[in-house]
Image 1: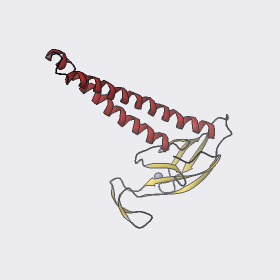
Image 2: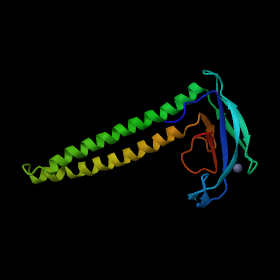
Image 3: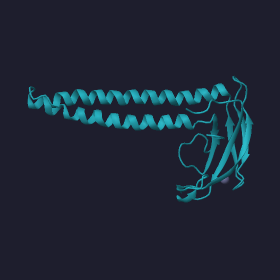
Image 4: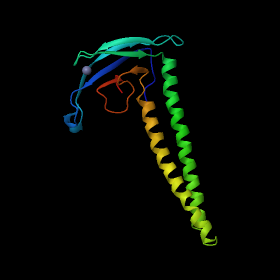
Amino acid sequence: MPVPFVRDETFTLLHRGNTVARTVETSDGARAFGWAYSGERWSATRPEDGEPPADVTVICPVCSLPLRYRVYSVAAADKIRASFRWAAAVVAVVAVLGVVLAAQMIGIADDSALPDAERDAAVPGVVTGVLVAMAGLTGAWALFLKANAQVGVTGRGAGAAGYAKHVVGREGE
Ligand SMILES: [Zn+2]
């Protein structure tokens, strides 16, 4: 589970140094295939709950690009994260319905007591159910990762689950 949001946060702004994945050394000295990021920390105090988000500009220490970010209150940050969790849950329910549909249709398609025409007619339902289940599980997982990647800040590279040019994270995550 991600660390709860607090008012005084230290964020990291990282600039990706290479565009193609290469061998990099991780902090414990192991070698891994990935992207080399460098950057710095910046501290921010979140607005009081109920106050509008604060706009801040952070200068990237590597490319000197000014990057604009919006820092949300703890309550608003929780809400953003919760909305992604909700979306993940809804999509997961759709995936379960796909499994149920596929199971029902497999039951019909496999029932030798039923006429062939009825059994054949159930096959598209099996395929649809399996596809819905697979797409739903993939989507739910992506939204779950997205929920955990939220840092209560929006802007370039903030809360991105992928490998953006600039990545904002919370220190210690
Ligand atoms: Zn940069």
